[in-house]
Amino acid sequence: MSVADGTRAASFVAAADEVLVEEHVPAWRKFLDELRGSSKGLSGFVMIVLVLLVTAFSPYLMPHDPTEQIIAHRFAPPVFDGGTYEHFLGADNLGRDILSRVILGTQTSIAVGFLVVLIAVVVGSTLGAISGYFGGYVDTAIMRLADFQLSFPFILLAIIFMAIFGPGFWSLVVALAVAIWVNYARLVRGETLKLRELEFVQAAHSIGVRDATIIVRHILPNVMPSMVVMATLDIAWVIIFEAALSFLGLGIQPPTPSWGVMIADGRNYLFESHWMTLGPGLAILITSVAINLFGDFLRDTYDPKQARL
Image 1: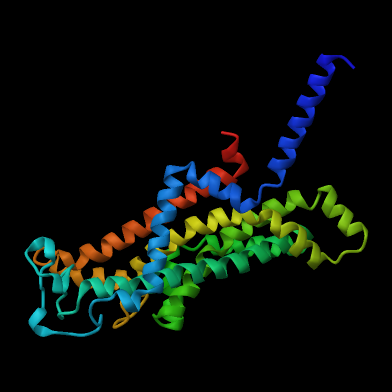
Image 2 (image 1 turned 120 degrees about the vertical axis):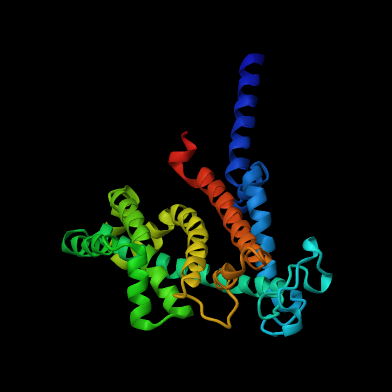
């Protein structure tokens, strides 16, 4: 063998070794590498971690009892408007500390966001996979149900649910979950229609694997990246609409602190005590922006259509 042939062989072996090393890089390591290379993804991730830490340790971070009413402290201004550090973001019309209520309201908003999206993902992905895999009358029935639900305006649907079950935490969760489950059903159905024709699904079906096992082990895992991207973006949507419905009096009810309820309480004092709406408004803005930044990063990373752009 000539020197040139030996050099080419060595180059081929080195390239093969690189491919093998690259193939054995764990998925979490690739995710961290992608995250470090994306400024918007990293900034969104850091802000989300901070929000989750506030949610987890809110009982220890609140400087005051969020439900304690001190009449002498009514409309106490925040630090940046001539107030004291006792009420860093000021106090509301009942003398309650706004910072403490904003911190505790984080638990409510995050809980609603995660519960709504979790229920919608489970119900929507299950019905979408069944619809796409079996087709026929099953597919027609599920998709017509989805079309029927999409024909209702979201606000009207929420009002109907609140009228039937009454305003409250779980009524709000059910109303929002019903509003968005169709998005996951349509997404999973479209992906399932393609996946069920592929060789590995046909092979599993030919050797007698049960349909439920094929859906759970072969179809849903391949749809998971797209669902994760949509779910991340929907959490921000749910938090905003939770605040909107609570603002209208259809969601979380007092005395439970909620960002929407706090903004509703402060609307009558907007010109005299603007800080009553500033705290919860900034909390909604920061949380929504953080989730959307991280969701855009996930979409750019894991969506094949975005990867080709």
